[in-house]
Length: 458
Image 1 (cartoon, rainbow, N blue to C red):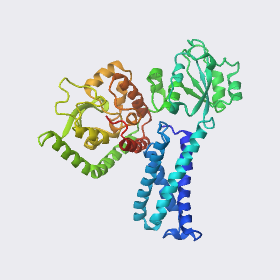
Image 2: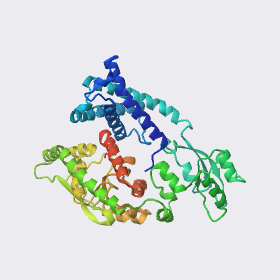
Image 3: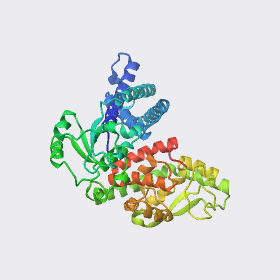
Image 4: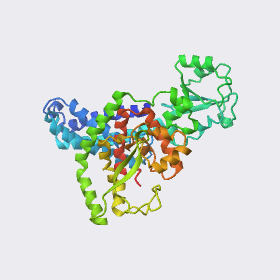
């Protein structure tokens, strides 16, 4: 998982402001009285750090540190406000557990208001600065043919906000696809030209590397601190997915990632067990309400759970558990994709899908070791058989356990066609390549945004 410099800098600035918000709220309340008396311990910094930490976690959980955040200003304000309310509630609980850190309620309320204003204003100012070239890497693309064209297909602002494309250098064997105004004539001395133009990176996108590969010049650039990236690696970093149209087996075989040590697997299993047991205790009341709702709508004899065969780790078949959200005979003609406003969904099922309550029984799949908390969503064998024949690298998504939530679910809505399956596979491969416990925690935190705002529900 790659962390972009502007996002890290924004988090550092906001974290500092949230610490300052506590001091400012106490100073306003005390009006000249020693602020050391604001807490029983006589030290305000630990109290401020607690609030700032919960504030950053909450901002992250509602998606405000995601490069794919495209909410309006009103939407951003609502998310900031929700984050600060959450931070205040969590801080209150922490101060109750640790009385020495406690501050008065009205001071905490003032801190929350100051935090909302400080974070929102900072984001408005930061957005204007990042739109300039201050944080953007200067990138030259070595190649101007079919492979290089994939960079021209980047349409979303989030995919291009961290770099500035200087131009494309045509190479032998390229069928020119880049526009004429973006073409840069091949420099006689690539290293000198790169230094003079203050390049940060060179992306290798040659259609034919057997002709005119500038080994010596690239070596000079690399030793001078200019990064040399393969096209798949560059697109992976900028888009958060592995692009199938530029992928080749050697990049997977010899590149970084796509592995997991025994220790990593053990830690992930321990995390799955602890998190599943803990979450079951929290969501048990919602599960009971779901059972009651299904019984009321469909009758006492109607089945509550829906069992469906899915493809799991290394192609093994297992039964995934969900609360039934469709009619009893929803698929008389066999397996089919879910669609928008699917008429087979019951009224209770629609509510459960919007709130993702229908997924809660899968915690039992996690406890049994058939699934993990985070991973690619398990597909039905009927679909997998078709997709493996038509989509390259589809089998590789089964090298990890399927998950209740995942990177693809955060970045792309439910798939209802083969085209959507291709798009989601690119995000799944990104997860398989970069998976780690830290990445899993980040996905789980961002899943809160999906639940609260209903993204991805169908």
